[in-house]
Length: 217
Image (cartoon, rainbow, N blue to C red; front, side):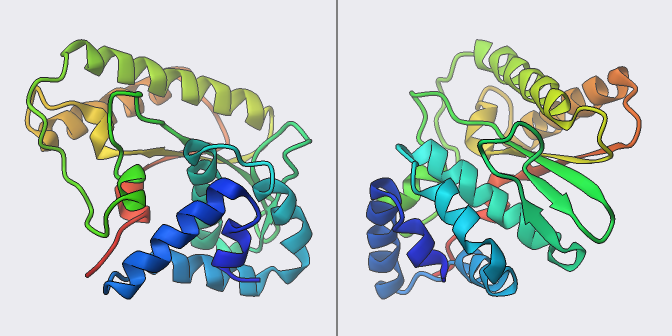
């Protein structure tokens, strides 16, 4: 199995796969596809489980949630990641080598925004945030969304030891302040909230979705 075969398990994934192939023909290089291929080559025994994860996908947000799980698993490839079935409540991954669990949470964009991920469906170029008029209330809304995702991740982790990986897109962060400042504020809020929980045996990692999904021309 390779990344395209896995994508094409669902109609949404197949449509996305066709757009990717078109962009590749135009000279775009998606390093994240190569990472997924490498992961799949190392876990052939999990192909059936991954097929069950990708076949029911109904929309692009679900698709990128699953792709994000794969890319996080790739980062822990040396630790022998095992995917959890979606039919079983609990963390997304188990790391056989360290006996840790990993829960992946991706902050989706609002309906009014075009995320860096969805832009891949239309163009081979990555998009940067340039809008000027976003509501300042977006900052509070995104922070609340982050808090809710962290709370849900902790519930899914239960008493297990491991890691929570929070993925966020720069497009989410608003344009009232400079993007660098807004990102710094967002991360500070997340880390401050995590510190207030005083959790033990769980590491938190905040990762740009833009850094996982990118196109190089």
